Length: 230
Image 1: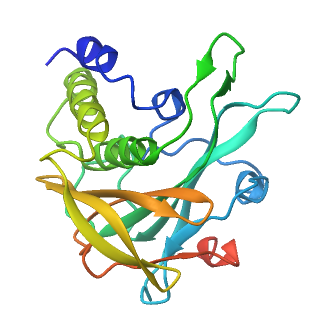
Image 2: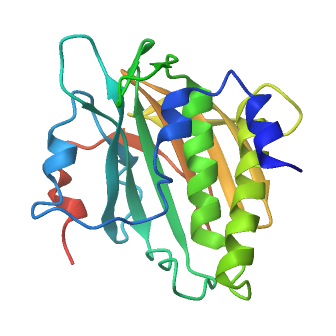
């Protein structure tokens, strides 16, 4: 499938998600890795207390600006389990689950001021989660050039799927959010699973591999320091 054709045909997925960095790809960490998370004006979500394993930070990012304000944090990811390998490492059978929190945003100007971002939606969370899974599970035997082609093609497919959460590519799944049942849309692939739904004040996406989504629960994180421990 041609990536540019697929993306152009998917207007319902927000520009916020399209312009965001893939959550599974780490970038250079700031002096205080919590700084971008603490700057957000929305609650962060992670796996609830049912998860007793390791927790770690991935990244938080900005998708645009609102009138009269500086660039804002719009999304971010919190990891659980074994960290997925970095891009230069071979991807193996590591067990992990990543929760992507996306702020509810109305349409607004893009970060560079050249366009308008659509309002965020559950499709935004689904695309970010799907792309994060791809970035964490690409086939290790691919060389750099072929890997990028593979990521571009698979990201286009993830885009189309995220644009049709009510379609046959997704199944309903009810999971607890802050202890209350909440409907999600869920799908599995050979690379792992992806889900998307809503929570108070935000949209939630999640992806994982080797960790069952059926036993997952989500909760607002009162103290992010649990995600900075070695």
